[in-house]
Image (cartoon, rainbow, N blue to C red):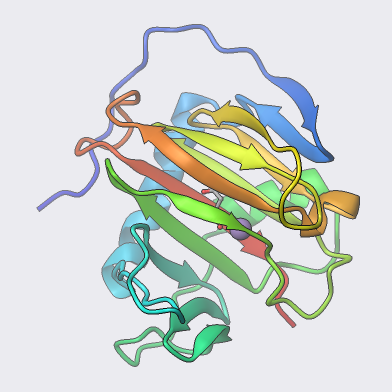
Length: 215
Ligand code: SIN
Ligand code: MN
């Protein structure tokens, strides 16, 4: 069964532009359609070797987002808490982060240090992600780089403490967000997706890749 199809072109003109929202650097239309399809191709063997799973959360219950990872570490959650794990829950090593994904990190951060985790989140029609901080990493001076593929997702961004004003922005397929500097510990979440707004994934849904330096 093919999880993804290729060759589907959205009938719209997109122009690259850079926005700032609460310190988040949003590179609109950073990836042209062909590059998006190449990324999907690169992700197919990763998802085969390390299938998506629905993590349990410490308070009980399960995340609506399905996820897996590539890299030396994968983000994991269960009743005991959030953490990075050296293996997929099936006991296999996480696959390597595909080169075209590392190239995005290189281009946008210019850092010598490479990310050691690429968290892959899949949002189906009803999936969302509550407001949270990314704080399971050792050194917050490294940014988190987030790549959106597939259906549009409504990103909500707040400040460094819970509560207070939030702002929202729709992320479209091919957008890349750099969460660094003061915004590295900003609360963020995804309220909803516009299911079937993109044709990149034949079954619909949104993939989000976040590149992180864990150790
Ligand atoms: C995340 O915070 O891990 C994902 C953000 C997103 O899906 O845009
Ligand atoms: Mn996050």
